[in-house]
Length: 529
Image 1 (cartoon, rainbow, N blue to C red):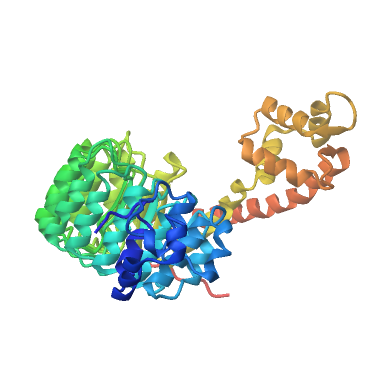
Image 2 (image 1 turned 180 degrees about the horizontal axis):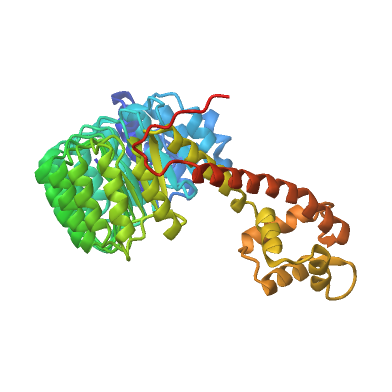
């Protein structure tokens, strides 16, 4: 079979659809074809098209009385014409979703039941497409013929950067075909192969993709919901260590156990490009957590690791955070649905509190209920790291839950630029009129946006550029681009009342906290009225 390319895209399909009757007609020739060499069926086998845009290229056995009138439109709408022609010759109904997505950056053909022939028609048209950079083909059961034609198209197309082939029941043949694409294609950056039928030794094809070298453009690879197992984990682990381009790798739900995790951990320790790793629902136990922790101690790139739904216990969490405390890049760790007990989170935060170099910002344990001491340690951590947050399942003590909610409500005003501005003025003990007068350099009784921005920076108001813009939009009530004295005073008074409510809530919360007994073991009995 001729390789699918811009030169053979039409003719290769036509040759497969020819019948013996067609061949008899061509052997005898016709008056039209004799008078017009290079056109009609008679010249189909003897002429070689020069380029796709030439008139000769389009004179195939599709040339009928019904289609001749459309030839002058082909140059303007080539992809559509090629697709419709391919569908006619393959005897399939054109997909409406494909027709709608022509000339769009995203082509979503997920779960359309295209099958091998439908994929062939799509691939035929996309050989010459110059618009689509994301192609979604999940759930189409494309088969061996479909994946072969699709990969031949990808060897010609240098526009598509994202490809989704999830849930297509792809096997070893598909893995080999996909790997061959990356030997010649350096524009495909995102590849999703989730939910297929890849087995352990198929990982060799994926490892080959990762080890192509600097030529490959692959950055994001999703192999989740397959059956790679321990052997697959071992193969990919070595490839991870050698790869220098991949940034996101998803290996969730692959039944990778201890030996596979061990190789992956070793690869992470040697890798210098991977940013996000997902190992959800594999077999990471306490020993695996220790191996990953040691890898994180040496890694200087990884920013997020997902260990949701594994077997990490309190011992594993303790060991893992000992090494995370030495890591300078990891910002997010997810440990939801692990048997970490109520002690694990407390120990984790205690170790984090003692760390001088960790930059961890997010700790997810969404199914865990934590004891009272966790909240105490969390407050200490957040005093040092204001950006640090924990996703919890809940508190074991109702009072701690109320305190956490009260703190959230109390500090909500810090996210509102106008309230931050008003609080800043109150803390500086400055009068509102004096502030306006100081900012109004030209004595026009109005503040331009530049005057207001420069004035705030001069007095040291703790707002960044984005927050300054939001503040200006709030105060400029009539949206004329300037803030007059009335707008300034009205805005200040109106929002000051909001700030007062927040601060009163905070005072009430602090008073309630001060009145709590110091001995947490003594049960607290609610006073009766």
